[in-house]
Length: 347
View (cartoon, one colour):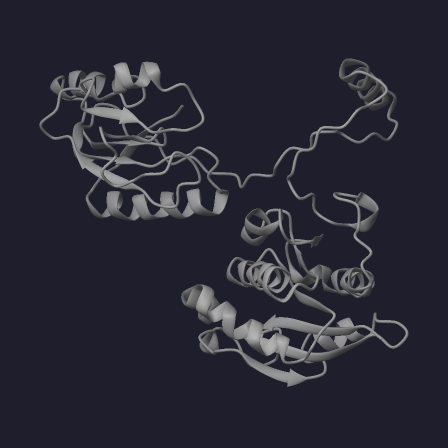
């Protein structure tokens, strides 16, 4: 018999909606909420021995301490495997499912899995550590997701590790790269894929592209009207010495520095701490990444008024979730300060 503990949020656990999203973790014996549907796909003597329910906001705001509370309740059921979700494309719920599963794997030493859509924040954050069953964006795919979780959970409990990225398992790839030997060189394989595509035959790419959320362009500023412009950088342009300790990769915060009295960036005063490029030329002239000198020239022509601060972060290896959050945080400040346009200097 496989003992399964199921983790769900307040809505799918049957407690209520957004009004109680701050509810702390509670446990129930056996299946509850969507767990009843999951139980129907279990075979033999496999069963859900307990359900842990927690509000999305409680996990999001409580961080590691909130996850610890969940793990304590999970451990009390002595499970062989933990299933979280499915959370589909949900933001907070998906991140909670990923965090709980990773903590189960790391702290309890037992397998765990969840089910998310490929573009969800939880998939981006946890796919390297947690097996994630691919789902639709919405709960319209609930039946297929529960069936897949019911099929995979007992197998993980028995120590049957699915092959990384195996399409027949329905799992998301972990995003890890491994060197392997192939009988045919890459150019030959690429031509064979191209010919298969031209013939209409099935083929599978060796390098699946990530899926990015489409960004709608804003309306253009009418010509001839002055406006307020800000300079933003993801190249890690900071004062020499990096006073706010902006990391060279995986940045989770941003900084701002006054530029109102500068006509450009001088060598030795500002530098790039980007860990993914050769920063030599940027350090010789940081205006190559942040065009302060050119912007001042246009400002003197009356084209716009330059914002008094440079906003900067480091995009190197940053997760989509963190970069989107940083962008929102910057945007809120800029909009509140009356900025109408931004130039984002890239690497």
